[in-house]
Length: 200
Image 1 (spheres, rainbow, N blue to C red):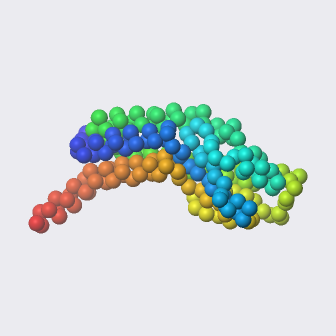
Image 2: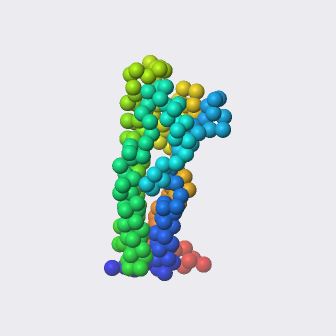
């Protein structure tokens, strides 16, 4: 079984350790701006809890029939920290083991984690924005309030933004780094390097 270079192993280990940021910084964020809230309202999604202007957001959402945002809405909080911990352990093992097959496996796990997180966020946003109280004080025909998955979206007089926070960006960078290690240590890359330097 082919081995990783020392540089590749170090990058794998550093990438795995960088994922510890998920325990110290928010992973995701949702922000809202409107004329009545020029300073904006924000919600941060951590590995096991929520922070931000939840009281103000829930008060505003009450009038349009949206359910209050509560941590109980996210069952993922009960097990996500263990999933991240297991992935970190796998990354460290792969770096110490030093086999290319392990790096491929680690990359696949990271990609699946990212895809799963985006799907999970979309499902939550869809249910949250479509399941409205029919007795709400403010009703707009055919209007739903699903927040954007990534990027900006206009919701009535609110501009909503959804995207990664610090830990989310770090995990994206981790995935990119591991991808570069896998590609850089591939047979194709080795052939290209030998061909390129043989011309010098």
